[in-house]
Image 1: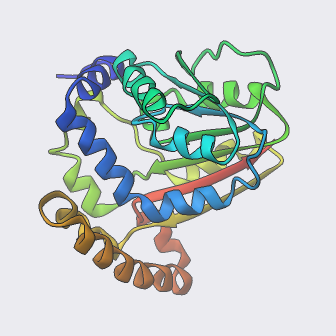
Image 2: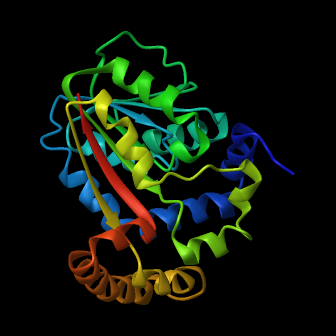
Length: 244
């Protein structure tokens, strides 16, 4: 049975076990996230919009770099978790709002950076990216981390994943390219092919060993994509940057 995205994530963030699962995914995405951060440049004083703020850990990172962060999500339970994190760390430069990113309640050109992690699979992609383009200031950038559609191991895993309840529509590189004409520049980098072997270890073993194994296999992934670039379409995750 299909659940609304809001219902699914309200349930997820009301459960400590499921919230911990979301943080495990952040750990599995470590290399992709680190790469996405390298695209941000100097965040000091920059107005940053995070769409789909999850555990709040990434908003906390942006805040620590001096960014003025606005974090939005459609799940009130998610936002409660983020508020608790803000209170725990006594952070002053993060604001949270319950908002649907298909209709952003901000003026044109409001933000210098927009950041999304695993959001577009739940969205009307064109409508959301048009809204992102509208509120993005000239010269600003959109950074996106998104699971890709055609990774063979993940296609099997998704048959059993709890996320299937939301009927996700995963992105492809060709879809990202289709939106490129809205922007002045577009670039992308893909992650995780052989390194997907490490995923069961994140679930059932010590994460230290899982991270070590993943890092070793990522070296093979990087070599493979260099030798045979078309294989990037079968990788798990893409990091995309659009400039306005």
